[in-house]
Length: 497
Ligand code: G6P
Image (cartoon, rainbow, N blue to C red; front, side, top):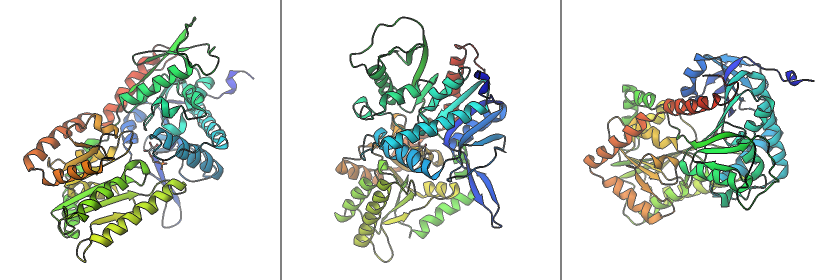
């Protein structure tokens, strides 16, 4: 067979992510349909998708779900079905019990299983095959996140005509941590199949470049990596770069901090319904002087326990009183079949129960705890109702909750407490930045936030808002695609977006 055995498709712009941007909903009469999920990524990419022939490749969110590609508001949705075995090994296993903890500073110990790795290769290959089949000659393909790090190389092997971008939404760890991974070289090679590799923080991009130098010996210059066209590297190289001859392709690895659709959050916050709802929330909580808010996926990277410890101690010491302060904690259920997430849930719910039992009164519960997701309208009302927003992540690629809070506060009020371990802290410098491991420091900062005079709150919020409203998600995608497109012109058959 010739290369033409690989079918080419009709789409000029193809996005690939583990999850599709649609959720399957079952109607009352039992028929199934799809609803657009409200993520920022799809909002940002929708105009580009409409302008070109755009397709989105991903998993439909349920095991063994097979369906035909369909159009959803101008986006071609193409499924990659995953079996129960794939979910256990590729998704829950390698993606979320190996890579996720490894890339988040080993907060939880990663598990290394060779059969999970086999499944990761297998599923990544199926994503690459589906992408190759959907992409037109010279198309631009944008692969998303840590679940699909082998796809760029696999795709380049199938389709050297494509321009391939990759964006890592989570941190890329320092080499001393990354080097634990038994398959560290294969992952780096997988990513280097891309023309542009995007990271959240400058530090993530330089961690990746260091891994490339250590594992492959390739030369890096600023944001550029020189990848030899013929790889003669004899495996792991520990003594640094080797003088190479011959030609190489240039891969760009740099930071593109992601954001949210800030204007749409603000617009929602400005609606009378949402403002009424915010007042109602405060009234339902018994109109405490201060409402604090935490909004997280229930994940061990989010530092929810550290936050509760600080708050519990302030209550125990009588420096805060449940009559005056309520903490609303929204904990979105996540990855509930992974052991570490089950253990975390037990630990958090035990702590919440203890604090409420020890310091609550009949009229006032210190923590209003919610183990479920809410529609966006309700989230925006909560942001408006919250005097203090607590983002205490131990490690977080970006943390979009911090940006959502800021975008909603058109009243220029509210105090953001933000972990320096969240990518958002690189930009949101006028938040109250904290080290969540420093419980005493966190306690002082909570008291400072509660006591902060209005003038100071407004000055800080104004400056935060300028950042978030300017650097929104459409700027992020435009900038990434601009750099990606400029790489396309270096190749022979690049396709301009
Ligand atoms: C993080 C990851 C995403 C992931 C999301 C939800 O934000 O960067 O890739 O989709 O968490 O996790 P889940 O495992 O439910 O897709």
